[in-house]
Amino acid sequence: MAGSWLLGNGAGTPHVRPTAVLLAVHRADEAGETGPGTEVSLTELRRLADTDGLTVVDEVVQSRPRPDPATFVGSGKVDELAALAERTGADLVIADGELSPGQVRNLEERVGVRVVDRTALILDIFAEHARTSEGRLQVELAQIAYQLPRLRGDGRSMSRVGGGRVAGGAGMGVRGPGEMRLETQRRRLRQRATRLRRNASELARRRQRNRERRARNQVPSVAITGYTNAGKSALLNRLTGADAQVQDVLFATLDPTVRRVRVGDVLCTVTDTVGFVRHLPHQLVDAFRSTLDEVSRSDLVLHVVDASAPDALDQITTVHGVLHEIDAGDVPELLVLNKIDVTPPEWVDALRRAHPGAVAASALTGAGMDELRAALATRLARR
Image 1 (cartoon, rainbow, N blue to C red):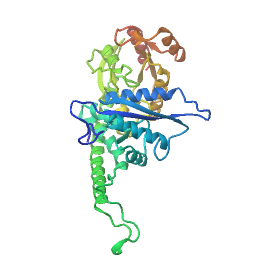
Image 2 (cartoon, rainbow, N blue to C red; image 1 turned 180 degrees about the vertical axis):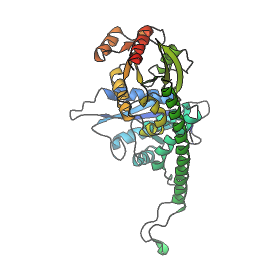
Image 3 (cartoon, rainbow, N blue to C red; image 1 turned 90 degrees about the vertical axis):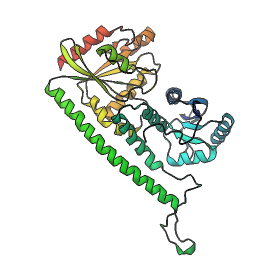
Image 4 (cartoon, rainbow, N blue to C red; image 1 turned 180 degrees about the horizontal axis):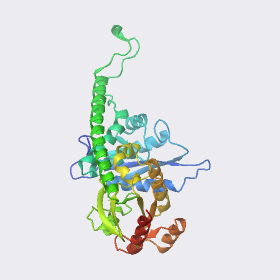
């Protein structure tokens, strides 16, 4: 299953980027004011769509206290969305949030095109970027967890459940061929998930054995983590001389890269891990648990921040939230303010005031790397 499944079979034309309309609810208070994070979230959704090879042709945004439970946005906005999708010929609609199965169904019936949510988009990007067998296994587990509650017929070929008394005396529980097909799909997905979890458990045991071997050899471990596209892989390359893939796209790194490096008088391992993002799907956190254990079981977290991002402080908060979720909140942390070569000095100063002890550096130019190595050596020597 891992691999792009966002558009389904036959959608789009080869060599032509599929088109999408973004749909967002900006949470408004009683005075109608929206918070500062709403536009940031929509901007990030545009980047996610671009990373997944989609062209955003337009957006529909509604300010309201909370999403509509039936259609995410109000009825008038749904009509506006349907007209826009028809006028632009969009292939799909992407909602900036996680939709319930009922919301997806209601929107698709009224808009007439495929509707997906932010979670599905992120899962699709992960599927495209997974390179190793372990990465593909973890992504497929996340996809199954997401898809199982959303399996349904399309209303044309699937029969509905028979309920109560029907013609011919058939009673409650009589199933049409559509539901039987759905049950078969669910059973196959559950069986596949069981096999994948078994394989994932073996990989987790292998990782644990590697960690125990490093611990016996008294080799401390450093885990590079942070928001997606903060420059983690570039920093790994600068620190260790590795050749990890560096791209200006979201979630370029899914499969951990481990390198040994001497920092001062200390030999340690440095691991590049998957980046985080707002509203990271819980299915992914669960599926990547064994990989994320590299962070929770490390001796030091090297938290890389894109200092040039206008919402850098919010990104730091998001990463701290995920670290607590994976039981890594108590691991000692060294904050690295990366990309200072393209960051206004006053922004760097503000971040350092908010986070005393942070090191400012540039993985691209090498600026600040001596200070970073010295800070690393001091932290590891304390261990």
